[in-house]
Length: 389
Image 1 (cartoon, helix red, strand yellow):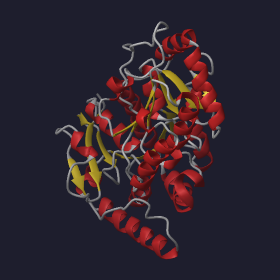
Image 2 (cartoon, rainbow, N blue to C red; image 1 turned 30 degrees about the horizontal axis):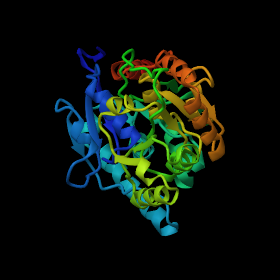
Image 3 (cartoon, one colour; image 1 turned 30 degrees about the vertical axis):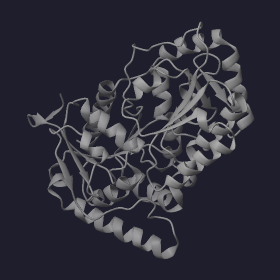
C-alpha cells in the first residue's frame, strides 16, 4: 500500500460523462478491483437515471463539480467551439476550487475531455497530474480542437501519462516534457486469465461476434458485409454486443436495415450493452475487431484473447501488439471487406486452425486481470510522486 505521511495515497479520478464508453468501463473495473489507494471520482453534473458509475463501489466517494459537458461539443463551427471553450474554462475553475482537488495527492484524468479541463485546473499548481491516453494523439481520433488542446495544453502539463498501447504512446512523445513519466499499461478489461473455455476442433463454427460500442468507426458495418458474403443462409450467427452511446442510435437502426437487405437479418443478433462479457464470449467461436481507423488498443482484443476465442483483428494500431498473425489470431488488412470475408471462410473450413489459434490466444503473454492493472497504475503514480519530490 502506498502511503504519504502515514496515510493512504489520495487519487482524484476525473471523467466527463457517465456513458458506458471504454474509458469509463475500464475505470469502473479498476476501482472494483480494490486498488491500494484512496480513490475519489469526480465528474460534471450528470443526467438523472442509471449510469456507468452506479457500479463503482460505495467505498469510493463520488463528487460533482462544474457544468455538464455534452458529447461532441467541440464540433459545429466557431460558435460551438467558443461554447466548448467556455465550458472547459468553467469546468476547470470548478475542479480547481473543489475540495476533492485541493485534498488530492495526485489527479488522474481518465478521458481526453477531462484531461483538458484537468490540465487547466492544474496549470498553476504543483500538484502531480497524470493523463490516461486511450486514443491516438491524432486529429482524426481527437478532432482538430481536441488535438490542439491535447498537444498544447494537456501533454505539456502532464507529469505522467498512462498509454493503453505503444502505438498510442508514440503519438504523444513529441509533446511530453522530458521528465514526464510515460508508461504503457493495458486498460482494465475484466479479464479472467487462465480460465478460458477453448474452441474445439471437433465442433463446427456456429457463432461470430464483436464486442464494441455501436459507432461507425468500430467496424460493425464492415463485419456485417463480410459475414453476409461468407455465411448467408448458413446455420451460423453474428452477434454484435455494445450500446449506442453518443447519439449513434441511427447507425444501429441502419445496421438492422442492412442485415435485412443482405438477407442475413435472421442470423444477426444486436445485443446492446452486455455486462457479462466473459459468458457471452464463451458462446462464440470467432471474435472480431475491425475498426475502420487504427485502434489505439481495443479492450475487446484483450477480452477475446483471455477467453480463448479465435481472434480476427485489423492489421494496424494497438491490436498488432497483441495478435501475431497465424500464431494467436489472424490479422486482416484494414478496411477490406473481401479480405475479412476470406478470413472468416478460412476459419470455417479449417477446424484444426481454429483450435490451435484458440489455445494460443489464451496463452498470450502479458494479459493482466484488473487487480494487476491497478498495481501497474500504482507503480506509475509512485514514480510520478517520487519525481516531484
